[in-house]
Amino acid sequence: MTTVHERSSVAEASRRLSLAQQTRTPCTPVRDLIAADAKAAYAVQRAGIASRVASGAVVVGRKVGLTSPAVQAQLGVDQPDFGVLLDDMGDADGATVPVADLLQPRIEAEVAFVLGADLAEGALDHAQVRAAVAQVVPALEIVDSRIADWDITFADTVADNGSSARYVLGAGSRTLAEVEPVDVEMTMTRDGAVVSTGNGAACLGDPVNALVWLARTARDLGDPLRAGQVVLSGALGPMVAVTGGDTFEATIAGLGSVSVTFEEGTLA
Image (cartoon, rainbow, N blue to C red; front, side, top):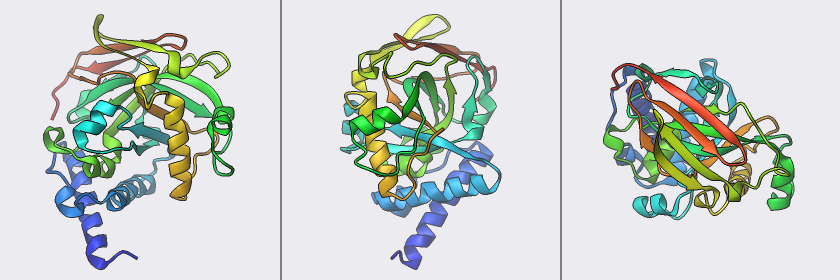
């Protein structure tokens, strides 16, 4: 049972992050309110999502973060985290995204899964999770932090919905019978110049591992993955800072390509 103080801290952290987004003014970290408490951090995340859903947004999936061993070591954690994808976060392949909506954006290329079945019952082992995947899609995730200078710990990024902002799914797709996510190679360019490379093994050893972890974690938290939802499985290579006017394209061998352009403008 949570105490009044804990509930107050969660509410204040949620308000701080929401205000940062509304005003496009990055805020101080929220760890002063919730310390290193992962449970409290996810409570802040749920409060933020609940507020957006109450305003009309619809949950369409999840994103997995902290899948890279290097990033885990940097933040002193030994597990990934997740955030929630809402319908107003998605953009079409080739879309132009206004930077005025963002604060401190960065971009990374990922393998996305579209589920064809619920992942709510059973062992949720690799065989069951793979069987639930309807499509494998190339994706770009635009990450952003409401916290000034990306000064984040595990609790800060969890509370901030996994430091998520927007995502773009490629127009093409494959099935797991046609491509093995662990084997893919990724190249991402900015205005034609290569800025990031990586592969499927960089994502928890295999993007399917990230999906298995998420399926089990989501069910344990009482909100299992459902058919039709999208899952961004985690970065295949280093994320890259974004400025207005940039065009990024990621090519993922075996899956195809996906691109996005950022409208000229000034970031927060």
